[in-house]
Structure formats: C-alpha cells, structure tokens
Length: 159
Image 1 (cartoon, rainbow, N blue to C red):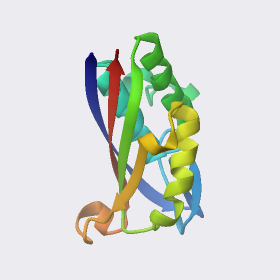
Image 2 (tube, rainbow, N blue to C red):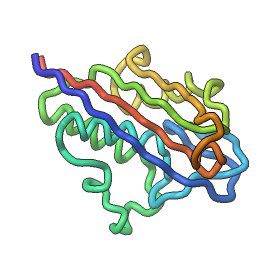
Image 3 (cartoon, rainbow, N blue to C red):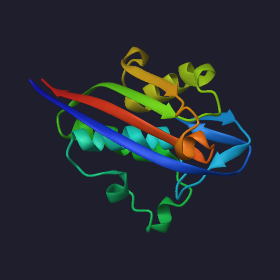
C-alpha cells in the first residue's frame, strides 16, 4: 500500500467587511479576509496539503495569482481540482485535518458546518474530516487580530 502525507499552510490578512469565509462557510465578523481569490485560508491550506501529498506543487502553481481569471474565485474550485488530481493519480483521500489559527471569530460553533461543506467537495465521510481552532495567545499577527492562518494535513492511500 502506498501512503502519502502532505501539509499545507496559508495566511490571509483582514480588511473591512462583515464576514469571513472559512471551509466554505460564511461566518459573521467585523472584517473579511483579503486575497486574490475569496481568501478562504483554511480551504487553501487543505488544497496545498493535497497537492503536497501528490508532490504536485502548490495552489499558486496551479492557480497563479498573476492570472486574472482567478481574481475573486471561489476556493472550492481549487480544492475540487486537487481532489480530482487525487482520483486521476489512482489515490484515495483518507482524511484531512485542518487547524485554523485566530483570536476571532470563534470557530467552534461553525466547525460542524465546515466539516459538512468540506465533505461535499472532498467526497469523503465527515468523520474523516477534522476542523479545529486555536489561538496564538495574542502573539504575532493572528494574536494582534491582523489576519487568520491555517495549517492542514491530508493523507492519501493507493491500495
């Protein structure tokens, strides 16, 4: 059996707004995340984890920010492409674990909805998807409320 692990990390800063989108779920907040696409930092980290497990680069190589077609694009597009590559290479996605790093907004009340949204895109059972959060104890850019970071791990298997 061929087992591969990949990890991903992403960061996006805040701008004025009324919600953040994390794992495809809109969460009311005093700010939005900024980026070339919709800035779903968690979905970007998961996408990079999958591409990493496949040893096929990262989200920026597949969807360059210099390409105007990706301006404001839904991160679901990026994640769906990574999932398609898993199938095309003969692997199965075993599980995904994502940690969102921020002081606010609170992630816990939305984690179940995030897992459900991811399950639809990833094509795996919700019990194979973990979404959790931590703070940075008010240290660094996330601690100062300047943005959100996310780290993710994906496990692939080829029977």
